[in-house]
Length: 463
Image (cartoon, rainbow, N blue to C red; front, side, top):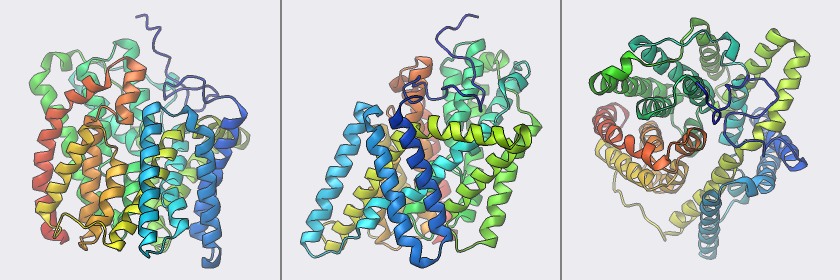
């Protein structure tokens, strides 16, 4: 089948652009090179910040934050117009609240405004290197399976790979399927729902990094223990709906094979992170994930291709793919400024929480509020950064609050026409984001009802 609009599935280590559908605009030029190096500097400085003696911590955080902001300034023109508008609003509102609260005597920590989200951005950047090793090469993928079992294998592949390398996984898998048959509603909604569902539990998603950054005291082990079953429930609902509503499409579904060897990288990573967290309890979990991701990527590349090729591929990734983080950089850094401003306004007494307590009912209400906000295009990081200062004033159980945020991220991302996931599928496969998002609204409503009951049960154990 001819498919001139869709590129071949890229080699994860090849020296050419792929994945985001943005073409070559990120691959050349001094600005992209400098920006990639600045982002790498942010990652390394953030890791050192967690390992260095206390007296060196503040200077390292300053340099990490400055590196991130400089990279953003170099790349911001390549962000979409709507994203630049969002960033401008967040920065303007955040700085305005900081000035207003400071005028009322509230002390402002400029370091927090500059570096609040460098930890989560560093984790996202470090995890991105896993795309070099976590997926099989295109030539290693055998003939695509067909039928109901193929559909289940595809869901499993998306779930496993997405848990480690995030958006790279569904794009590469969808590319492979799209070469055989153009993506339709059935395939698109299945891929997006399962991918978003993994953000509920995976420690390698930006969602988890953001939540752990803002919700101090949340326990990663309890979050994963509580959220993995819900992520599996999401996959089960997707599969059961397919059997009920699309039996003919399942029978002829051209899927993606799930090989047992593919479980190696996710299993090693999860084990390494779990062991590291026990050995080094004083080090930030985000820093541990970043170190583990970089270590596994480097070691596997060295074993497979030799040290020279390992260095070459990681260097190429730094210069070619790290600059593609302009969306995350600009949005998360500006959200950090907004969060500092919101916290300052609460400290000044100018803003008070609309809630009086935080229990299971409040958790479900907050989830519903965040889901509605996501439907109209508000990014989850904006909601997390703005709501957290108000909710934390109620002294909630941080793990329960983190679970609410992750569930909202899961359901909201798949249902928002402005989410990065929807926009990538629109640009790559020609599926309008508003249409793809609307396909997920009934699913989001069903999962919201299930999640509300689940939160009520969890609240009995976590409050």
